[in-house]
Length: 253
Image 1: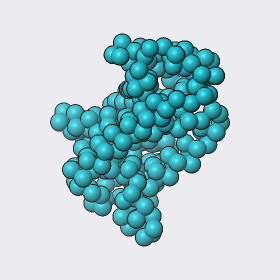
Image 2: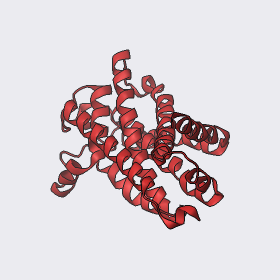
Image 3: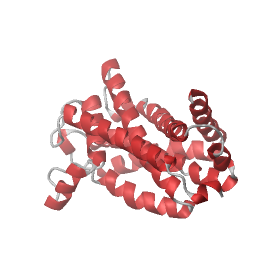
Image 4: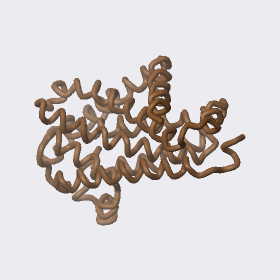
């Protein structure tokens, strides 16, 4: 099983590194988002008493994990169309290994891109020490596994790449916007403020903000955020494993 997981994980990494356009876009996209939002909103308001560039820096890290999950798990649909997935399914490889390999591959890509962006922290005015970086990377790992597991689940259930993108943007973008990644949510409309409490991304972004920036007003405590993120990751991995374990007629097509 470990050999199959490693092979699938390695395939995701190699595929990403060989796709230069995808690699370039994935590296430039978060930087451009951060520059545009920071430049437009720097003097508009100071969320939680900090510069907007500092506030949105953590949100950008969460956005990297989420967008990488979308673009990495779409390979499930491509693998099905190319016949690779059918070959894996008829092999003696446990189906749980398929889920683990694909999810870990996507999560590793998200982590790698987030680490690259994290190197820009001094330019954003975010001061980091070894302890905060280590804690932040741990939270990022959990968040990356969670959103990749969710993306993998939808990719496994869908046949159309266009349909997958549509559903992911409708689902993931509201999750990100209502998590406090872009703007503080504690003073939002009561309905939006209520939704944020049931939004699992809220706890991932909150845990990441606690880890890298310390206590911030308007978000749950670090233990609550960390617990919520851990449960989110465990639930999404379990869901991904469940849908893979279900035998369906089209899997053999």
